[in-house]
Length: 228
Figure 1 (cartoon, rainbow, N blue to C red):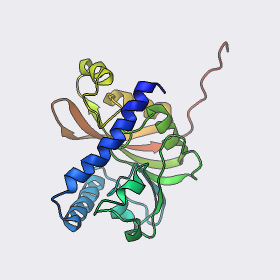
Figure 2: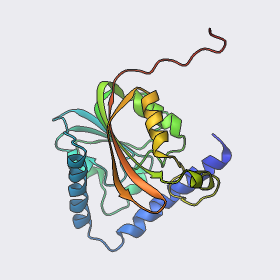
Figure 3: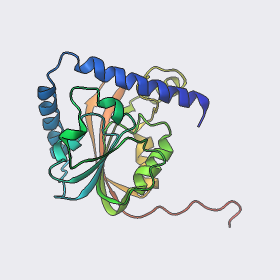
Figure 4: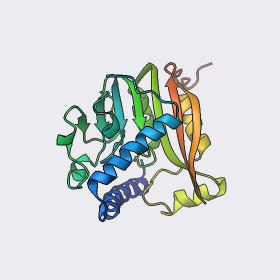
């Protein structure tokens, strides 16, 4: 991991916290959480997603109001985010309000010690990580054959803009910049079958996409150097 990418990630983490502070400043916490819960239920309906009752699931990169707010009383949720301890200062988040959720204040990369989950949620988080490939590897390590995944991210609409955004901090909140095809390829190489892909929002530079996937099997190991 290069020094520049590390700096970009650290900046993005700081800006993420400031964004939440500013965004919530003039909102009612109760109204925000109710609207957010309705939003999560609508996303699942759009994707044809059925939460498995009482299943072990992970909300990866959960933020202060992740999908756990809609599922904490329906599934056994583990919620991960490196900023969880800072989110405690926000009026919309308190771990005490979700006593059945296991909160883990840790980065996704390197999180390889969690038992397999039946369902995985990773909404608008994979483009916030420090190491994209390592994060996808870690996410895959949480799956077993048949595990289902909802993954969302902003993706570039124009290939020619991608190198500019990777070289310059044009989107400082998101240290990872990729095309939709990059996500498809990365998921399939790791053994995920893409069952559905939906464009939820289109802007001038980006699209917000969601993938519904099923883990079919571990991908084959890479060939050894010099192997025939």
